[in-house]
Amino acid sequence: MSEAENEFFDAEERFAKKFDYNFILMRQIDKVRGSASVEWVGGYWEKKQTNGVQTNSYIPDTREVYVNSVKALSVLLLPYQDEEYVNEEKTFFIERASDVEKMRLKLKNKDSLHTDVLVKKHNQRVLEYDVEHYTKVLRSLLLLMKRNNMIGSNNRRDVA
Image 1 (cartoon, one colour):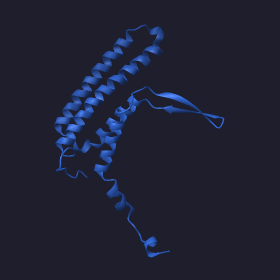
Image 2 (cartoon, rainbow, N blue to C red):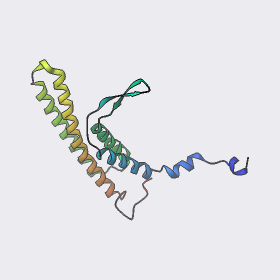
Image 3 (cartoon, rainbow, N blue to C red):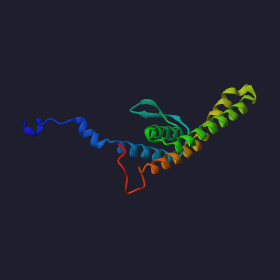
């Protein structure tokens, strides 16, 4: 063995350079971009036949993937959320709670014979609403990042 092969390296230091906060943040933004750039369809089970063996795999609802990607970005930006963002977010979630409750009450007043169908329709409407809602949240997050010089500036500060 050569001396280079025996050389000790600090794994934490090595990965810290590659996976710093900015890198993780930009990867999450790329996930949001990717999930917003596909056709939004509901989740479904796909059957595949390989070598005579049938397997079932779940293809996730792409709308849920988008919403969850925006939520994850929001969590990553938690330490940088300023008063302006917090107030916007509070307004968004108060509106969402009110609108979802209105949808639930409409469902409650419908014919109870087909409850399972109505619940599925309600859940689809809420999910469609959430896509619009989290698009507003995403816009606010991007503006928050801009205010913190995390994007769109040559004077980008190191946020880590």
